[in-house]
Amino acid sequence: MFFFDPLYFIVILPAAVLAMWATARTKSAFTKYARVGSRIGLSGAQVARRLLDQYGLRDVGIEKIGGQLSDHYDPRQRVLRLSHEVHDGTSLASLGVATHELGHALQHAESYSPLMMRQAFAPVAGIASNAWGILFLGGILLASAPLGQVLITLAVVALSAYVLFALITLPVEYDASNRALALLESSRTLQPDEMVGASKVLRAAGLTYVASAAQALSMLVYVLMRANGSRD
Image 1 (cartoon, rainbow, N blue to C red):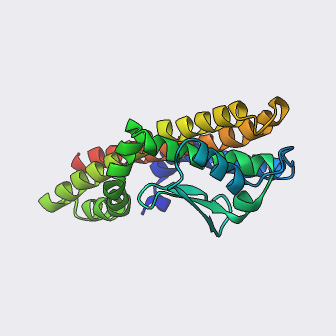
Image 2 (spheres, rainbow, N blue to C red; image 1 turned 180 degrees about the horizontal axis):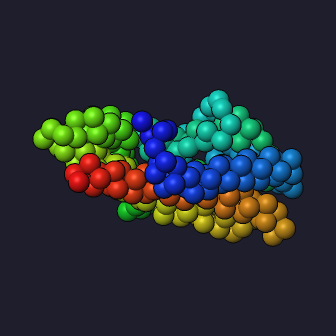
């Protein structure tokens, strides 16, 4: 239904363009600095292990996973999961991304409030992201019946929950990147001129989370506008 609604394109298009630009910029930055080797010559996994041990996080594991830019920290298993290129790579991009995920492990160890909130809210957000579209479509189809308004209201609540999750994610990701850059510099893993490349990779990646939040917000605006229209 959304694909044939002009209002959908008007409201969603700016955020969609931002998301495409942010994704392209992240891939471009990673590709560029994946070709620039670090002087220290250690892999992303080696740097992460060394810094984890330095901060007393010897119980946090490191695993290699498939995919590109699929890197993440799993707080439930207490493990850094690094893509092949980041795990084994010695480039500025590899070290930047690996240390970003290490930043999440440090957040977890310190019970960093936004991370704890995101972790607690993640199951609800997962359900909400899958449910809101079905609820909204059902509400539009049954707009003339009382049940339709109930479904639309539930869709708005579910989408609002997902928007909240996306907004909570922003400080979590930016703090992890700031920690990563500070660690790479203070540990002298990267030299000042090398820090520029790592910073560009992490800052570009941060924009993808901004774009994701913008998309969620614009979708909520669209749903609210259509919900109000269905009541008229």
